[in-house]
Image (tube, rainbow, N blue to C red; front, side):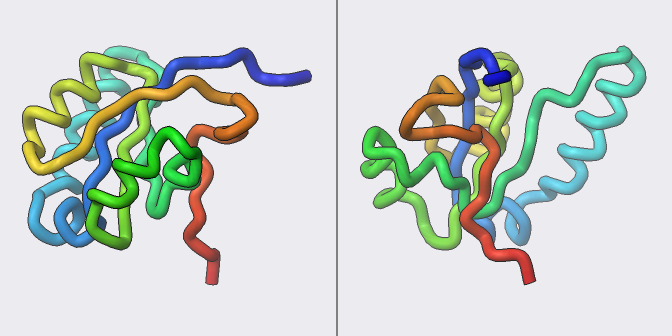
Amino acid sequence: MTAEPTTYHFVLTSQRFLFEEEPFEEVLEERYRYYEEHGKDIDFWPVKQPAFLEAPEFADAKARCPEPPVAIVTTDLDFANWLKLRLEYVIAGSFVAPCAAIPDAIASLESVA
């Protein structure tokens, strides 16, 4: 059985910016708490070194993002827009997956030690 194509939205930035310069842990905790209180399923995932950046259509975004990159991938466009406004220094976009170029929307190129 194959997964149905889904539109994913993302904000992309450097790991240093997101994890060291921004209070991102607080943002995540607040969002998890909100989802739990409202009975919502989690629809966002932080992805270090996101594999979707290897797709040809993201060559420009990959080139502009400081290394190593991190993306917050979500199916919620409103959340992605909120993150873009909240974090300011990010690259935002969307893609549909699974597809030939992006078989897994939240795959990471980061090796597991």
